[in-house]
Amino acid sequence: MSDEEKVKGPASYFPSIEKKYGQPIAHWMDVLAKAGPTKHSELVNYLKTNHGMGHGHANALVAWFLAKK
Image (cartoon, rainbow, N blue to C red; front, side, top):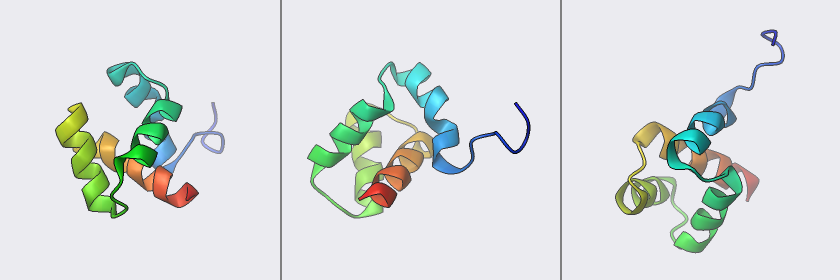
């Protein structure tokens, strides 16, 4: 894969998130949609507290989720 084809931004974390937590990104988008709070930091803390996710992974998912809203 050339530099121009590499995924950048939050999506660059997706393969490692799927591997580490065993769920597809669509699952995490659904979790976030049902979580309720809409503030970035609240959603990050929700994933960290309720799903044992690391800060970087949680932050990437929330950034992607909020950008798609």
